[in-house]
Image (cartoon, rainbow, N blue to C red; front, side):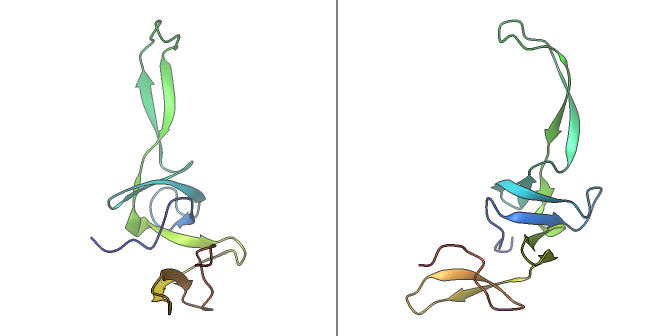
Length: 109
């Protein structure tokens, strides 16, 4: 598996699949699968549980998508961003926009 250049709480755009073109926030990363909020919704049947006071029925649940089907999205430029990783003089590694060289990570280390 390649090194992922997408992190939790990044805004990503879906570039393949049934939700192509939608954007969302990364909630969780599990290996090569990424859980994006509001994307790849599937219906799940739920049994009623009177002890927990839950009604039965169908619920929409988010499922993960493969990392190759998402791209980092820049909300300022409203465009997909290609990411490079640069090592600064003090040894820290930061993600950088390949097009204009700006840092993607908000914090300055």
